[in-house]
Amino acid sequence: MSAVPALPIPPLPEDTSAELLRLLDALEPAGLWWLSGYAAALASRGTVSTRAPAPAAREPVATERLTVIYGSQTGNSKRLAEKLAREAEAAGLAVRLVRADAYPQRELRNERQLAVVISTQGDGDPPDDARGFVDFLAGKRAPQLPDLKYTVLALGDSSYPQFCAIGRKLDARLAELGATRLGALGEADLDVDTVATPWLERTLASVREVQKSNTPRAATVTPLRAVAAPPASEWTRERPFAAELLVNQRITARNGTRDVRHFELSLEGSGLDYEPGDALGVWPANRPELVDAVLESLHLDGDGIVAHGGETRPLRAWLGEKRELTKLARPFVAAHAAQARSTELNRLLAPDRAGDLGALLQSHQVIDLLRAYPADWQADELVAALRPLTPRLYSIASSRKLVGDEVHLTVARLEYEAFGHRHFGAASAWLAGGEDGARLPVFVEENERFRLPKDDARDVVMIGPGTGVAPFRGFVQERAATGASGRNWLFFGNPYFDRDFLYQLEWQAALKEGSLHRLDLAFSRDQADKIYVQQRLRERGRELYDWLENGAHLYVCGDATRMAKDVHAALIDLVAEHGGKDRERAAEYVDALQQQGRYARDVY
Ligand code: NAP
Image (cartoon, rainbow, N blue to C red):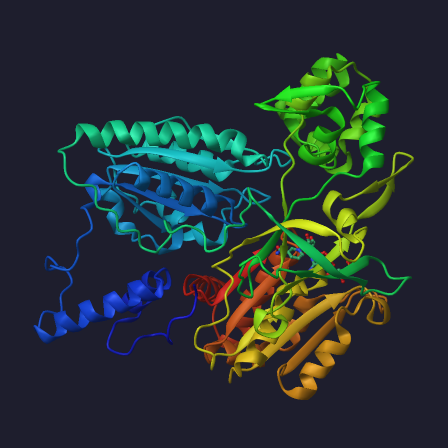
């Protein structure tokens, strides 16, 4: 959630109101209603200090419950934290679940059982919603925690050198502050559940032991949000809905730099719901040609039956539907190096070669490795060594209020030549190859951090180059459908105006109808020098700063490694220039926007 009223709340000092807004931001409507009644009761008794013991506050004291804190960028940490909280609750344990940026930091010293589930972004950064929590723990204000028992589940991607760096850092720091591990740090790779499932089981067992040995009391569970409620639809990540493909349309010119597709899928009869800002998870399948190439290079029989993890199917089905073939990961390189007895590959795995290994992981698919370093694999060993296939998440590009039972996506089809062969992205090529009427397994992945302001009089600024524009199509549709009175400003960029202007006609129509108020474009390759969206931000700095001062919400979607960082730097520059601040103050201003939920990013 993001939208609470303007800052500062008049009767409160600025820092108090900022903290209050941060806490309110995490509450669902039921919690907000409860709080309003509670505050009114306090006020009518003339008791304005919430430090007084509150008769209505029936939560167990912090010392007797497990607190689960999560920091999540793409939703995996959130999903696992929710699962832990749900299972702890079902087991009768006292538990509360909090998103890292809604966690009242001063409560940390009172915690006795803590589980942290946190991901690491590309270069070793925390997820946006956990920046403040990570800084607080790392900093001097973090309290000593001799009475705390804790455990950390770190999520990451082993193709980056800083694999699980944030989780590792928190795990070490909590120990340094005197806390004791409830269980060992879990380090989960992209096949998250391989590590997460046993970690969850271990954590539940340890917490059960600890709470059993405490003074017996009825377990009282008051999650800050209704997270423990079952999902509204029966269709989930594990049990996806087979959505019918209605439209598969290329929206870049034939001679465009990229083949970008607009997809429309039917959710009719699924009960699946989504909000603008959410993502659609899609379970892809590997191309039969790629599966054949793998079988051929290893001289394996695709019809051979392989049993693994309690499931039995032909090898061809394992490779087609259940294993990653287009993304290479470190553990498979290590297994293949041993299998191929390759000194060269083994050297690449040395700690001082992380950069070279990273380059190999980015440039090679599994088939490239098999071709370059021949080895003998047994079918069952191969299935065990390859990573389970994971769903791909795409930002939803539509609003239900306009499209009803449909969901729209904007996806760049990945296809390139390398090592003498054509290569394809698993999901994008599979989606693009879909005929009308095909059925695709999908689920909705909520993204509560990327929401339109609740107060529709607020202005919104949307920065989405390339396919990063997807959620903003949904935002503009939604604001038009609800008749929001705030203004909408879009910054979009792509290589060429005449080939890559995604949804050009729609934006022009929206400008005409008044559902889009400003559109600034950066076509990078239409002139000798590159022009990117951040240049447009700088050029419009004065107005943009005025919008922000006026309470606007800012959104960035797209590439995390370069664009999002450059846009962030441009924001700090323009706040410094037009707000008359030095860089440090300007950076604080931008951080404060983030903490108030007025600067949200959906980037990877
Ligand atoms: P792209 O590669 O991001 O390129 C779009 C435009 O941005 C091009 O004009 C490109 O210029 C320009 N650009 C390159 N470097 C930039 C920089 N440092 N700052 C600003 N602009 C820069 O577009 P795409 O191929 O559509 O890919 C979009 C990216 O967003 C992908 O990485 C995708 O994975 C990600 N994405 C993420 C989400 C999400 O997190 N929910 C959703 C959609 C897309 P030149 O190429 O001419 O240099």
